[in-house]
Amino acid sequence: MNARIAVALLALFVLAGPVAADDPGAPPDNQSGRYEFSKVTDGMLRLDRQTGEVALCSPRAVGWACMAAPEDRTALENEIARLRSENAALKQALLSHGLTLPAGVMPESRTGHENDVTIRLPDNADLDRAADYIGRIWNRFVDALMRAKQQMLNKS
Picture (cartoon, helix red, strand yellow):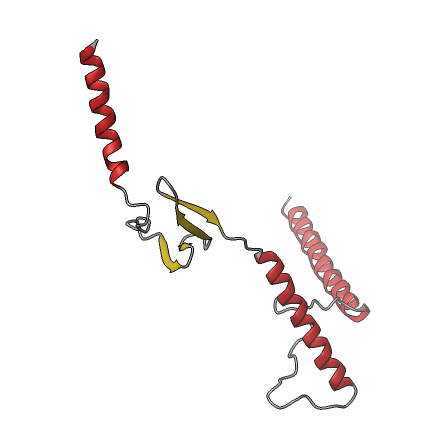
């Protein structure tokens, strides 16, 4: 029984040794290269190079703790899109009133988004041309069948 307690105490001492040796004020390990750390007043900022997430890491009683930094990328992108749209509308309003744009400001090259695609629908003339083309193809097909039928009758 005493041998078991001694072994347990020895195992506890061996396992607890490295934890006690850790300096809570030392920056986190960056061996994998995935994270980039920058010193700030409250600890360290951690940038995840794979995901782009940012976290604030600070020393605690046992090691370091990292809390994700608040970020709302969608809200930022929506605001950028709104401002671009508003800017284009203001430029268009100036130009429609016969005013010139300030120096260095270029007019919008497109009225829509950069990836918009404009599709021209066929008008009646286009449809008539398509119907004539299909009619000519049909007539040729029927003529070819009639010639094949006639050749078969002539052979028999």
